[in-house]
Length: 174
Image 1 (cartoon, rainbow, N blue to C red):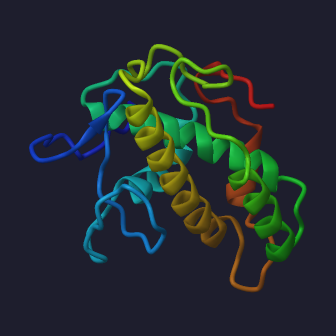
Image 2 (cartoon, rainbow, N blue to C red):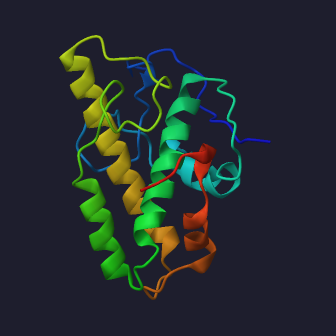
């Protein structure tokens, strides 16, 4: 059974391209509202549920937050692919930073991994808002992923990096 997001309440949450801009426990500047440090956010959920959800080829969407969870699960898969050959935390950090510097496509642009998952932006401002949110959430996910993909001594955690070989929803990661 697929793990779904617990963020089903939509009142007071801004949306862009049909995706809720959920609060993040983040110090990174961006359009996401700031969440309390002791509460679970969508990044925590994505990392916690990743190893279970990556085995599923179908994912029933029960709330708009599930769309973001799907996107983040795919992004974690991409990030783990980049970390696969990195033998130290320093090299892994460099690989993740390079991943963060890549362009982030939004729905309707070439390279967006899930056409049809999110609605097309209604204006250039909405596209920019969504792109900036995805950039912020990806950067936050990258930082937290490094802390689980590598042990405290800087060596890779094989129990995480082994999941780089998995394909999430049969989408091939390049």
